[in-house]
Image (tube, rainbow, N blue to C red; front, side, top):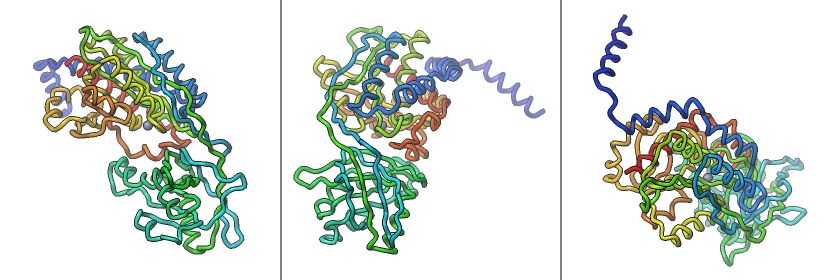
Length: 453
Ligand SMILES: [Zn+2]
């Protein structure tokens, strides 16, 4: 009975106060169409399972460029074109092998080469292992590091609620560990995978050598392997590992980013950019990183076209090449836009996974964010609780700030992202169709509001 009273009361409220917020009305239309169709997931299936892994310079990347062009044309975008660039090209070669030998017993450990690593000698690299968890511990080793494999085993801090912060606090070992260890005379490095998923799957990612410092092989190990290795060398410091890797860097290859547009009704104005990166690492189909971002941009374009919305500013959709290992796509896009004398009003990027949307990071100060307050009811419909001042935009759109762009980065729920990030687990099955679609709607809504501002 009480329920009935309530529902009559709410009906009366609805009748008395019709929706007058045009942005919210648009948001409801978007939800009505998009959530029934869930088309972002269908696009993601094509990219993840039809194209597959697509590391820069690979045949998969070429296939992804063709797919991107075809999809933009299918939607009916204008001015669909490639923005060429040369890309840094690294190949893994045959599968890596890591063997732990202790007290006459051999145990295989799960590992993968880090992006840009050199290979080991064909018969492998064999050495004792020393574990460190910080720069200070490494420095304290001094000459003891000579001839050893350094094992960087600092975990991502589980106490941090945002896993991107935890990643940020640990990833330095992966990126700079080899150079730091080589300066002390170490012969190789193993790095605990950048994940909190306690399983036997290794996670790759980029690493850098330093000019003038000896290049040594670098591999990531799964968390199960990391814990096994850590325990074994504590019990037996004379334990040895043999690492075999066959990776190599090839000469730069020609590739491209892909772009298409919905022309604005007011010619000659600055533009709004939506972007994500088309490449993935070689060992993963890259569903969350960054297939999700690509298909959210594509779905935004499809929805705007099919709802017949006519933005005042031109909206440009860009799939960037090689965010993972060089960022040449972003540089070439920036140069071509600068060369054409274009100015950008706003740029939005989705490169933090296809999980349920929570927020946008913005390059704005608190005042700038406050001015967007009237957009919040429409954005809240898709799970956006807030816009963070001085937040993260994204690696690919970053340069566009120099062309005037306010930068916005989609912030989805982060708990499960690093469970799959840069690993073979980043598959279509790890993506929820509704969450992915909500992210597409958040991108659509904010970009359309900005394009009409
Ligand atoms: Zn990414």
